[in-house]
Length: 457
Image (cartoon, rainbow, N blue to C red):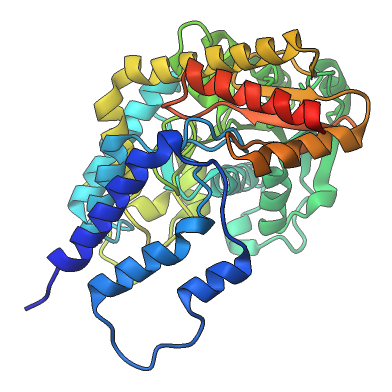
């Protein structure tokens, strides 16, 4: 008889101990790569081992190499944590082990995704007929949205890219802000368009695409895609998506919005104005593992035009049992064939939080970002951006080396963790407030640690 209780019980004990310790845990790894390799053991096992002992050894081996990104004092990159309901649902997702590519393979997963997709469309205020794909993250969400865009702009030019490929196809121009996220460039590489197709559009001092510069960049009788941004990765700034969409559509262009974390501002009554006109776009990419705080990995892609979405993604084969009664076959909306049921943790997170709970997280993180900026500014630290959402960009003096030393010192000190970046040619510290547990005490402790490291640098 299979012993499930042993290894699962060990995992549960280790998991709850880790989670309970997050509020006071050092925010940073405590072991080198060589120490981790030694603890885990690098030799291939010659035979079987007891599953519970394997779980225990794994947990012991990785313990000091974990970066506690679920901590309320983790401000590096734009990472969320995991809410209790979404984490528990993710465990069940793994236990149920459903292949969520087809309705026939898992009716439960398909219906959960269908319900969750409609909730998300409603939360973000998108057109009711918007199609939704559950993917790994914003990288594949951007890829999928841009694949739909590629299909449609070439279709309008009389070219079937899914059948004919790109050899001999009309050249596509992609108009994107100079401060776009690198996942856009990478997606265009994956799609065979190459980064030379990008026409960089000048931005303002916060990284927003300038609509006046975009207006001058359009060509005539050429397939065009415009990539707008909702939430600059450094400053949090939003492009004027409504104005950009109006311009683009006047030139028969498709508008894709990279909104990896900024899309969640739509749920907040006080921040929704940042996304004015966003529903006029054609496709959108965001992450659930950021502000919805579900476990990695969980990205979302939305398309206002389901037909190009399905045309770019779907596949037919004789052995596949695809539903003929309108039920959801998820492989029609994402680039994966076999895939885990990512919609289940998203469903649990939304069900547990509701609209008001999600808005509370977004509003609190915004307030905490402002608090962080205010404390540092009062102490003489230069704040480089307008804190419109959850991003705080700071610089220590006029010396790049000092700023980089402070970033390294803060990471080594362990009270909190944030990353360095380069903004408009200058070194900066980037503070991202995205975790559902972050509160005033986390901000005050972290700000004090940053100022101490600055003083000692």
